[in-house]
Image (cartoon, rainbow, N blue to C red):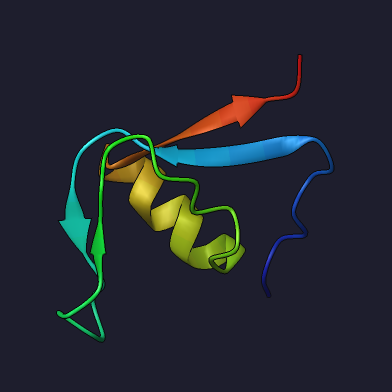
Length: 56
């Protein structure tokens, strides 16, 4: 079951990567990817491609 996203938390790219299902989509460092599914975000954080950003 997918985890629910936490309010006030965003996700930013820290290492460039391509979308796993559409290689024409390229994510650049600093890009906000918070719209991705929580499962995908968890996977990207684990791989070190994305970092969780908290609201300040």
